[in-house]
Length: 208
Image 1 (tube, rainbow, N blue to C red):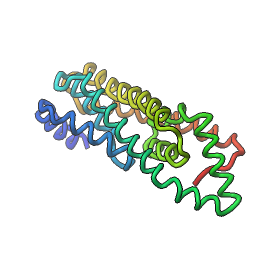
Image 2: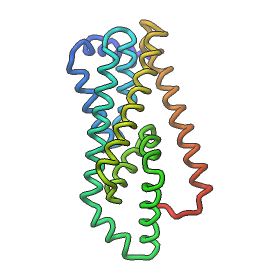
Image 3: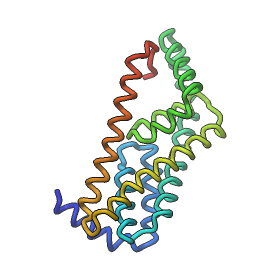
Image 4: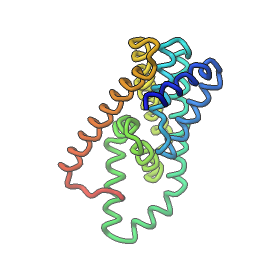
């Protein structure tokens, strides 16, 4: 595993000198907002490590990651909005489905901003929440403001984790990445745990 990572970082050190690497970060961040199996956090952390060792410019890493997240979240929202009528008809066929839809509307309306920020740190969660905002027909202006904030916080957080790791461990890029990735994973687990506890305490129905 370490050998593979060492080889990858050796390749990264050569490739990261090209401006096209920022486009890679931007593109992966977009894709991850729609297809949650794409590891955007991993790429941003790697870019941060590279910035810490002087191969990339940290502000541009943050801008590329935040910009990609913003575009991707908006695409996810538009997908949900375009399918809103179809999904609404499906749930309104039964009383249980109607209650779930009403619950989703209430959750997004009451805690939508907070949900958008916290969900950005949960792989898959960001797609569900952003798409749900479109399905429940939240205003695009409101949505865009919150995902801009969420993307900026996420990009800065992931980039700085990698950057600090790169500065701390110097030429040992593999160790810098593993430490930064471990911290990011720990934060995700904590957020998921808190979310699960709050969900158990709620007696409201969930939208599936």
